[in-house]
Amino acid sequence: MAKIRIVTDSTCDLPPELLEQYGILMVPLKVMFGDKVYRDGVDLSSKEFYAKLRNASDLPTTSQPSPQEFMEAYRPLVEEGASIVSLHISGSLSGTLQSARLAKTMLNYDDLEIVDTRLVSTALGLAVLAAARAAAANRSKEEVLAAAGWVTEHLQAYFLVDTLEYLQRGGRIGKAQAFLGSLLNIKPVLMLKEGIIYPYEKVRGKARAMDRLVEIVAEKFNSIDNLWCAIVHGDDPEGLEQLREKMQNNKVTCSCMLTGEIGSVVGTHAGPGLLGIIGCPAPRL
Image 1 (cartoon, one colour):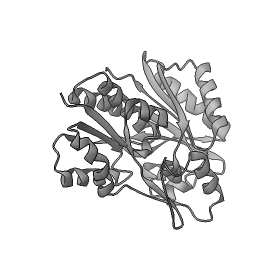
Image 2 (tube, one colour):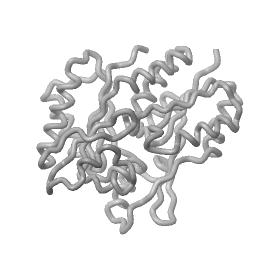
Image 3 (cartoon, one colour):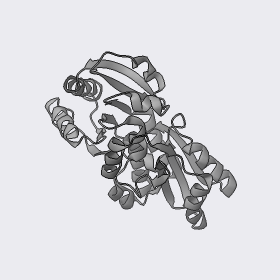
Image 4 (cartoon, helix red, strand yellow):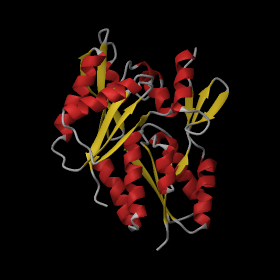
C-alpha cells in the first residue's frame, strides 16, 4: 500500500510541532501589507502580524497559493509514489481549493484527493489532525478520508469577534450580515456552518458574550463522551485562558484539546479580539 501523505494550507492554524510530528505538508497563503508580501505561518508570526494589523493605516489583503505553488508542493510526493490527501479551507471562503484542483489537473496524478472540508482555522486543523492520525495508524486512504469527513460532518464552531468590520470589509461576512448596524457594545456570537459564517446570537458586552459562548458549547458538547475540541484566540491570550477556565467550570471536558492563536490570513478577515471554541465527537480511527 502506498504511503499516505497529508497536505493542507496555512489557514488550518495548527502549531508547527503537530505539523512536524505527523509529517503534514502545509502550503502557505499570503498576507500583504502594502507592497510587502508575507507567507502565512512562515515569514510572519501571529504576534508580529497583530502588531502590524493594529498599527496599519490600511487593512492588509490576502491571496491564495497559486496552482504552481501547489504543484511544487505535490511533486516530491508524486515522485515518491505517495497517496496524497489534500485538505483545505472552505471553498466558500477562499480560492485555495481551486488552485489545488488546477494543480492536480496539471500534474495528471490520479492518487491525489482534493477535499473541501468546508472549514477554516483550527476547525480545519481538527479535520487535518484526524486524517493525519488515521494515516499514522496505517489506515487505508478511504479510512483517512472518512476520518476527516467525520470531523467535517460533526464539528461545531462558535466564536465571537470584537467587530464585524473586518469580516465585512474582507467579504467573508456570510449570513452574519444580518448583525450589521447593531447597537454599541453588542458582541456577535457567530457559527461556522457548511463553510459559511452564520449569525447565532447577539450579546451585550464582551464579558457576557464570553459567558454565553461557553454556555452554548456546554449545551452542545456536554452530552458527547469523547470530545475533541479547540480554543482559539486572535491576539487575546488572556481571553483564551478565561475561556479555558469557564469551560472547566461548566464541566466541558475534552479527550483532545488544542489551543492556539489565529494566524495572519484568518486574522486579516476576523480582526483582533476573536475568541472561539470548536468541538466534535472524536473520529473513529
